[in-house]
Image (cartoon, rainbow, N blue to C red; front, side, top):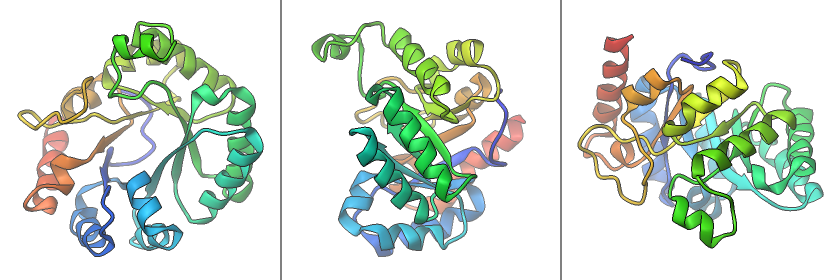
Length: 237
């Protein structure tokens, strides 16, 4: 298992445009998760002040923004986002080294402790999808190429499928943060995710952070759903 950055690896996704509902979910699950994730739907619908309200709850916040633009634009966006109090945010590795370094310099210039991670290959993509967009397959090799670029550019880690954890750990070491989406408890609906693992499988493989969305946020009782996953991980520790 990789070097832990957060005591509890579970980051629950609050991807909803309904701020009262997001705050209700966040408060109910806070005792059972290590952090909260807000994504593009949340941020574009509700704006910066809503991010501040989630940050104010007190749990670390991962702003899943996936910046990808020219370096100067990404630097400005990274600076603005770091000022909102997010503990983690991400950028697309395919933006290139100059863009990645611009994000790191700008974000850490505001908050030296902010973690900047790279997006490699989206978990919704398979090898056939890479062909269509002109990227080299297999997906695992493309992930490794982009992750190596992220480390070279000063990023703290990458977002990756749980199935790429092994090769990334071997190539990049235990101190490189691996943030894993596409996490589904056994029996859960896979929706549009294709490369997935259960929470226990991902932690055992070496993930530092597990991003879990629908199985918690869409549950009848989000607090109970988060607690069940946390209890399973604690029992196996």
